[in-house]
Length: 171
Image 1 (cartoon, helix red, strand yellow):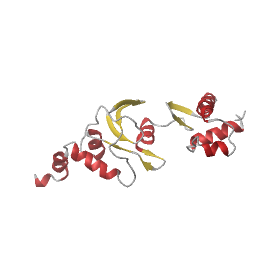
Image 2: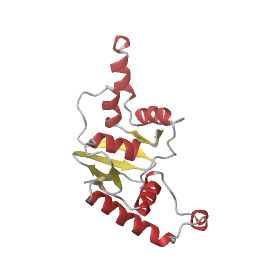
Image 3: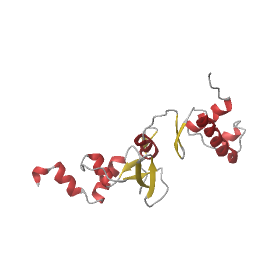
Image 4: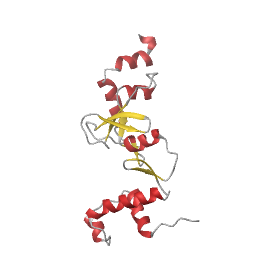
């Protein structure tokens, strides 16, 4: 038996997946929902799509059409790279581990991300991954994410570890 979705659900799902925003222009262009109605209706539609097996829910605001998305992939898309654009970087020991400078993975990943609104580190959990996320000092973009990673390494006073690891013959 083929599952059928009403056209309204497809339009609403398309709005969610493409990042449709509730703007006066969108309402004036023929959308029959008022701004206050949209978020509640979309949540109801997403619940319906999850219940019927069209979508899989992996946490607050995290949905996928695939049933086997890894925790690492969710973390990457939620806090590090969204729609192919960098919005976050690893920080401190997490960055050292990702760069291959540390052998042991830290108990918690530390991430600076535009997706976080708090100025102090906030505990988050995605599946088995525990992390602390905070808003960066400046917006992270494709143009500056490597610079921010480099500055974080220096800021964490890990530069001596990097020099000893990368240039052992000079020590």
